Image: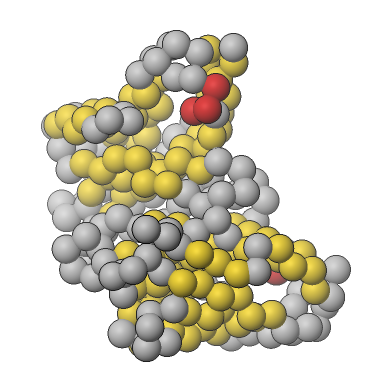
Length: 114
Length: 112
């Protein structure tokens, strides 16, 4: 079975641009969460979605937004990019209810903002 | 969500047993303890989870004392491929959903 897949794996943007990152969860997983990991630090929670609704939001500005599609895949959008947005963006999926206690992460999308 | 404290780094040699201790003095009654492993440029990977006493799987053991204010991840006979960052997390994972609070983790370096 395929794990959590993310695209693109690497991308370079300039300040002020917009970026869209995509995530496909493990088959059967209905919950998707997004994390930002800056070099040398642990991942920071950005959003959780399931049943196409936002279920949790971390301490990130409104430039960050996300959505979940009927097939449970998800997109993370970041507007007006700043240099500080350079990071590894991780997507994680899980079951809802029983099994919700374990997250499976993708390999991430490495964003560099110049 | 309970805050955790763990060593920033540890060194070991191949074949040794490695024990990484995590402190979580403010753990709540409904909180579980979970450990994730992360290799460079990869997402974290679930290792083990427990509530009390001892849990063992094919990869590691987790020891939790009666007061649950700390926990110890034990990796038996480490190899070079165990070089990674290990994160200790505490929370009500069944109800808090996809929101995990990661600290800085422990960077384990295994040498030949």
